[in-house]
Image (tube, each protein chain N blue to C red):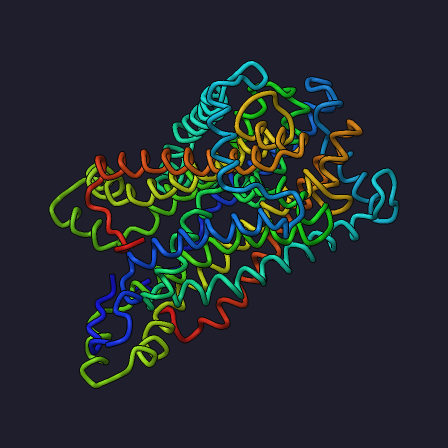
Amino acid sequence: MTADPKKPFPILPLIRNEFFLYVLSFVGFLFIWDWVAREQILGKSLAQPYDVVQELTRLLSVKLAGKDLLGHIWDSTRRVFIGFAIAAVFAVPLGLLMALNRYINALVKPVFDIFKPMPPIAWISIAILWFGIEEASKIFIILIGAFVPCLLNSYNGVRLIEPELYDVVRMLGGKRRDEIFHVSFPAAFPAIFSGLQISLSIAWTCVLAAELVSSRSGLGWIIIQGMRLTKPELVIGGMAIIALVAWLTSLLVSGLERLVCPWRREIGGL
Amino acid sequence: MAYEEVKIKKPLLLKILSLASITAFFGGWELIVGTGLVPSTMLAAPSSVFQLFLVKLTDPNPDGSVLAAHVWMSIQEAGIGYLLSLLIGLPLGLFMGWFTVVRGVFRPIFEIIRPIPPIAWIPLCIFWFGIELGGKVFIIWIGGVVPCVINAWAGVKMTNPTLIQMARTYGATDWQIFQKLCIPSALPMVFGALQITLAICWTNLVAAELLASDSGLGFLISMGRRLALPEMVVLGMVTVGIVGALIGLVIDVIEKRLLAGIRR
């Protein structure tokens, strides 16, 4: 945290304590939420926190459309991982190739630039026309959404390497191959991983959107089901689970990142 | 960048390759639809998309508005949501980066909201605001505010600590340091947030309109699907892409103008 060597403040040193404030704010948040829901300030469409927890524990045992909560979580997660993995496997090498070879760049970049500004969610309709409402269309959307940041980041990761690093390799008598393996790849890793993180969060957005539009299982389906049945506790429960699972998967990627490239610089506290 | 970029003349072959790949892309697309390799119920040829574009310029059927009205509606929604997220997110992020109290109060709430994909708010928004402008603006706002806060916060965090210590030595107050050091040093990150937020807002807009709306580009796309008119879907997608890219360009120009003296 930023060092705060201020003059000792006589009144309420507790207020200055960040962690005390965290707890205070969290409790306050829950309390206000509960109050707003109980007094029905937003109509009947907000559930009390306790109801949400109860609904979620109920779903652990009761089956919804043939699957319990864990089944739905697994459905969404599986879609995200398949789409994300395909995107990463193709996009990262392609981005690296584009950055390293200008002929490949000249071939691929113009077409990529056409697709780049299109939001992946705009593909949902056409994906449904092509693949129906089964798994394939959802994976396709996730693939499209995750592809762009993966490719862009590995491309820019190589292109923005400081030229001095290449000069050093050349000074030491390295060949083009040494430049690529000893400079380009390691230096691009942090950018690639931040691309993967962005991709992952986009993948979650996409799977959710796809499931909201049409599906029979998954977390997005739970939310839309809550909406159809006007059960706000189901909607909020679904949102909470998505947040939790998305956060856990992003922890997984950052754990992997620490393993693969420990030299990444981080901004403390974020 | 430390280096002045050296302009090397692009070899002719590279230009030809770029041109060839674009031509091959559109030619191939036209061909696979034209020859019936892909049935025309699934994909529209570029030529028919263009035809529909000309028609939609003046004809409000079958989805209720002309193309310009859809575009204007979408821009309005995205614009309001975007400005609101900048207005709230950037100051909040700056304050959270520097003042412990602000961080203590807002961080837990922010961390709760951050991992929820904005799209997940759509059902709640429909409950709360109906399918009017308010709900869509809320979704766009809640998606846009997150990158704003993160970038502004990171920008403040990256302030050179030596400068802060120096200011302290000279007796600057907390507020002065924040104002004179942290904000200027956060500016490049803040401007970075402009582009990121815009892209996120535009994506969320399409999502919001796909699910609940009666006009706008996302609505055009979902109408195209319901009416089984692939050329309408593709037209919607292309328009979304082009308009998004154009707004991005405008922001880029503004950013360059404002940042002229700051970025090396």
